[in-house]
Each structure stands twice: as structure tokens, then as C-alpha cells.
Figure 1 (tube, one colour):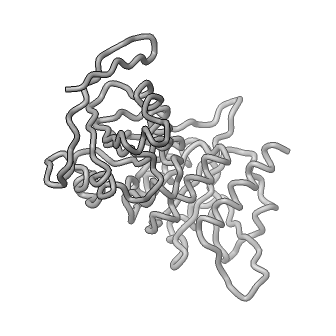
Figure 2: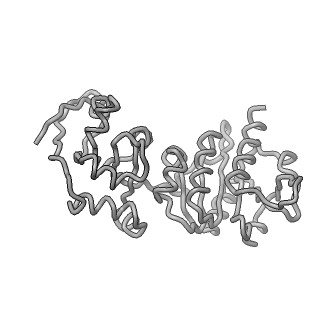
Amino acid sequence: MLHGFVELRNFVFIMQLSETITSTQNPKIKALMQLQQKSASRRQQRLFVVEGRRELMHCLSCGYLADTVFLCPDILRAESEYDSLMTSLPRCNVVQVSPNIYGRIAYRSGTEGVVAIMHMKEHGLDTLPVPDAGHAPLYVVLESVEKPGNLGAILRSADAAGVDALIVCDPLTDLYNPNLIRASLGGLFSVPTVVCTGEECIRHLQDNGIRILTAQLQDSKLYYDTDMTLPTAIVMGTEATGLTPQWRRAADAHIRIPMLGILDSLNVSVSAAILMFEAVRQRQG
């Protein structure tokens, strides 16, 4: 075994590094690849995979706990990141892998020689901020969004806009899908994200005095003519079918983005970003 002394938050401990893994038949590599590929495994074990040094550091800074970190020292040393990373890791299992194995477990190039298995965090509706004298929460609610790339892009915009939470109702995709994590650029870790049913979400919003603004073309007014300075939830549905009737009935206002071309819809992540930053504009104004 190799030993490295790691100082973190005013204490020192010894971190043991296993010998380098060079075979994809190693049980640790098999377990990692199963988590990458199968949402059922992620749900059952409450674990997910994050790739890249920056993504891992962001994940840790947002309070997620590491289970196992896979390092490729050859890549890390080539990029002068080895010492920096080794002094930043918390107590966890650390496994070294060869460049060949890292090429098999990494989804993309340029991820700095780091792949980690992380513990999931749970966010419930009861943990979200509610209106008080000093704060009017801004939520984004998504109903049955199924494309990981769209959800990841919305999380990225939600982080930039300072949204208090993203609520995903009746999801059709796994929140810890590797494609979603990559598309969010860490937004999944920094934006509290809750999964629940539509009924549970509507009840929570109404009980806490949060206005429901549904994005829809029918019976709606322009989004910039709607007050978003109050406690607000911006609700969006799928591009194909829009929102279900329960949301249309629960809405305090229906809003739309003006469409001046021949097409009648925008990508849901683009629409969400437009509406989020209108709330930012109004609140900062």
C-alpha cells in the first residue's frame, strides 16, 4: 500500500491508496460501470458517478459525500493536478487505475483523470425555503421532462439565476443520469432538486402562498407583463404535450413567450431560461 498524508479542515489523516487496477474485470470497476449504465443500480444503492476534478470538487463543496474515488496518476501528474487533488480529498476509498482503464471508465476526454462514486442527497418539499419578510422564493417546476440534456441545461440556468429550488414532478428521467450531470455542469449539486408528484407539489405551493405561473400558449398573457417579484413558481411541461389539466386549473396566471416566427415552440430549456431571467430582471429592478 502507498500512503498519503492529507490535511483537511484542521485535521490530518492517512489515506490508503490501493495498487493500480489494470483490468476491467476487477469488481470495483464492474461496480462503477454498472452505476454509470443502469439507473436501477443507482436507485437501489443510492449512489451515482461524477467525472472530472472540477465536478468532483464542486460536488463535495455542495455537501455530497464521496464513497470511492478512482484516480489515474499518469493523467493527473501530466496536468500538474495530482498534489492539488490529493490535498483536497476527504476521507474515502481511493483507487488508482491505469490510463487504459481510465479510458474505459471515462465518458469523455479531458476529465483530468478523476471519476468518483458519490452518495445521493435527498431533498424534500419540506426542506425548501418558504416566503418570509425578507425573501420571496423562486421555484422552477417541471412536469414529466424526459430528456436528460434539457433537465441538465435547466439546472445550469437555475444556478445562474439563483433559483431557490427545482421541483421535478412525475419525472421520466433519472436525476443522476450521467448525461444530465454533465449537461448541468454541477447545477444538480448546487440547486436543491426535489422529486414528487404533481399533486404533492401543487398542495405545497398553495399551502405556502407561492404563486403558480404556468407557461402555455392558450389563454395566457405575455410573461413580461406578469409580476414575478412575489413568491413564484414557474411551471413548464413537455415540448410535445405541454402541461396537464391539473396544472392549468391550479395556476394563478398563464404566461407565454411571444413567438414571432413560423414555429410555435421553443426548446424547454431555452424557455425556462427566458422566464427565470425575467424574474431576475424584475427582482433586481
